[in-house]
Every structure is written in structure tokens, then in C-alpha cells.
Picture (cartoon, chains in turn brown, green):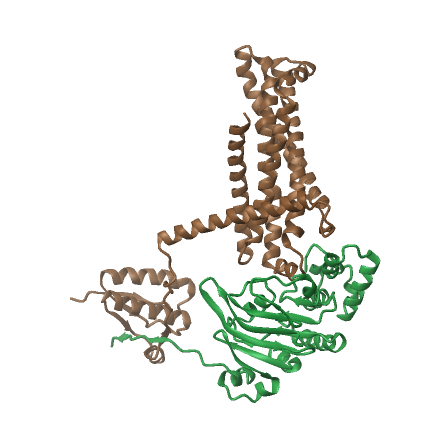
Length: 355
Length: 259
């Protein structure tokens, strides 16, 4: 018995019809033979030819029959000479196994550490040991970067730290009041702000804001061959691009961290006044219990290291970018993720060392 | 004494060897083209000469001074060279004048601003771009950007100038004017020029000698005239603007007709 399913083709096969027709014909071929009725077809363009070639190939692969019926003589003649391009096979000779991929990733991470260590040593050398060197590149200076990366970030850093400290103080004040320890709010919050929240939050915000901008800028320069141009002019990119940013963040992060910690304490003062009924005067006096000079110094050291992590990770990601605009985006994302992870790991180590 | 001598240069990326054994010289006031099909290693050769990448082996001599594979080019030699990159590679956050002044500031940090401005103005005048003194690269057209980059490349009045695809992306008129500018600089500054290009019009206009790279080696080292009359099929096709017909890889479709 005839196992054919007939599909009538429209007058003209347009790209819009193509997908539906293809799906329908493929479905039929999976279960039986196909008859394409082309009595209505008036003309056959590239899309029509591609469709018929695709169906004929699919039928051949599935060992089914695909029969054309009712096509006009000129179209039949055209189809009898039809050839299609052979799509080249994907070259998979360079395809890596899982172990190879893992190894490559390992080397990539190792390279990252190596580059980070190299950048750190260069920056420390030029910042601390060659501070009076006359060959220091004076332009594109630290002051400009300090303004761009530090001053411009003040608003957002202070606002976010203030709000987070406010909500922290607000929530903990109820618990403290319940156990009669409302008076400890100032000391506790003060300690927390300087020891943890201030440095950590401001660094994380700066990693997202300033770190990403450093990577994007340097990566764009790398892609546009500007870094190569600097090297051919005898200008070391590390001194010209990385060093000013390194110095700027070395100054900006501790200052921002200190100021944001104060803003956090101010948020606590408002909560203390409203919820715990502690006057601002008493709150400031109580702050002394939690905040010491040593704590502030420790906070500064932490922030300095966080600043270095942001600057060096951002610069490293920017300098090592390969490719085009897509690579710039990936480098920027990678910079934010790596520097925030680095900051949190460093923070954990500091907690172990300091407290 | 040659301006540049490349001896048995071998270079590549990782395991992949791009340049097998490259040797050639560039004489003073000579315009030397590096030619070849796309992907043959022209830019790799330039990067290796400029020490932007480290070659596996071979030596380079600039103005008679030999430099080993792993050694950087000393500053005193760098000042005798200039590089024009394909896209110009101007620093976008600096004005044209600041860009041109960049290498000068690096080498002479104590130079007074007025002197610096005078030198910059002179270089910009040489490339007919004095009116772009205070403009930023983004405000310039493609051709103007190339000329600004050329002004930066000649900041030290170099004796050796490297140009990577100077005509790429330019219309024929702008490309022609850039070629004329390079010839003018050769005549006025006496500079030797090494150009990576495959713009035939440019090649015919300004080349003194050329090397043609194929499969990591030099297929031909000769004058423009020798190239134009070469019997080597690849060279002949290159200058005659012929190309091989691509291999047609097609499949015949068999249809079964009813009735």
C-alpha cells in the first residue's frame, strides 16, 4: 500500500513559510515517505531550492522516498541540475580533552598569580624605592586618577555604607534593648565599622566602580594597540598606566574607608537617639569603648591592601586582554569578580592575623 | 652601514612557528615593503623586529648595533626609530599635540612646554595637520588620525620608520596622499621606511625594494621592477592582481519525479 503523505507547496516558498514547511516535512519523513505536490508552484528561488534540497537530503539519510509531483517543466529542469554547497566539517583536531582543559585553566590561573606578583613588585619598587627618580613619568598623574577613582566615588561609597550601617544598627538595637544592652550599640557598631564594614564595603564598592573602569580603559587601549605604541616609544605601560592608578587607590581606599566608617557611626548615632534613647553626646563618648587608635591603624592597613588588590587585578586584567570588544567586556566582569573575591579572602586572612 | 639588518629570524607563538628563517637588510633612505598574503606573518615579523614579541632565535642590527633575541631595544636606539600602527594607536584621552609630545616628554622630562609645543607644531606641520593641534583623536577622520600618528612616529626625527598597513581602511585619495607624505619624509628627513602592506597602488608608488613572505620564508627579495617582471607564479599573480579560483565543493541533489 502507498505509504506516502502528500504536502502541497504554496505558489511561492518564502523564508517565512520555510521553517514551518521544513518542520512538517521532516516529521512526515520520520514516519514514512513524502510526496511534495508542486502544481501550485510558479517560481522557485534560492529559498525554495534550499528547502527542496534539504528535504531530499533528509529523505536519503532516513532511507525514505521523497517524490516531487506536478512541478512545471522549467522548474523540473532547474531542479534536475541543482547542486548545493557542502558545509565544511568543523576542525576538531585541536579539541582539548577535559584534563587538557583543566590543565590549561590551571596554567591560566598560575599565570594570573605570576602577573599579579610582577605588577605588585614593579609598583612597590617604583612607588617606594624610586620615589625621587627623575625618570619617573610625571604626566597622566596620580592626582587625576585620585580624583577619578577616589573623589568621584565618595558619594556612592558614603551613601551605601551609611544605609547599611543604619539598617544594621536599627535591627541590632531592638535585640540589644531587649537584653538591656542598648548602651553597647555605640561601641559595638564603632568596632564593627572600623574593623570590618568600613574597609570591606568601601573596597567592594570601589572594586565594582573604579576597578571595572580601570580594566575597561586599559583593555580598550590594549585592543586598540595603544599599549604596543607606548612600548615602541620606550614608555613602560606599567609606569605610565598602572602606577598612577596604584598610587591613587593606595591613598583613596584608606581615606574612603575611614570616612565611610565615620558615616556608619553617624548612622548608628541616629538610630541610638531614636530607638535606644541615647543622646548624641553619650553616643560619641561610648564610641571610645569600641574604637582605638590601633583599630584605626589596622583598618587603614587592611584598606591599603584592598586598594592594591583592586588596582593590580584591574590592571592585570586590562593588560592581558586578547581579542576585541567582547574580550573587554569579559575582562571587566572578570576584574570585578576576581577583585571582590581577593578582597574577601584577604579580609579573612586579616581577621585571623589582627583580631 | 644598513639601517636595519635581520639575520635568520625564527619566530612563532607557542609551538606554532610563523617565521622560519628571515634575513634581509634595509639601507639608509630605502623604502622596503614587507609583502605577502594575509596570515603569512608580516605583522609577526614587524612585532619581532620592534621587540613587541620575542623571537625564538636570530639577531637584529639597528644602525650597525647588534641586538640579541631576548634583549630589549635600548632607548638610545628607540629614539632613532618611529612606528606608525595600523589604526594609528593614538591615546584617545590626549589631544593630538599631547600624543605627539608623549615620546619627547618621556625622553626629555625637563623640556620646557614652549619648546615642546614648537617641536610638536613642527612635526604636525610636516604631516600637514597643524590645525589639529588641540583636537582629540575622536574628532579626526581616519586619514587625519593616521597623519597624527605619523607625526608622533617622527617626533624624534627618526632614521628608521616602521609602518604597519598605513593605507588600510583609507580611501584611494587619502591613501595616495599618505604615500606622498611618506616619500616627502624620506626626502626631507632621509628616513628609511619599512612598510607592511598589501595595497598594490601604494606598493607601486613608493617601494624601492620588497620582500615577499610565504610559508614563513622569504619567497623573493628584490626591487619593484624585479617583482613586476618576476617569473615566480605567486609574485606574478600578486602584482597582476590575479587570484586562484576557489575550490568549488558542491553536491549534486537527486530528485525523484512522479508522473
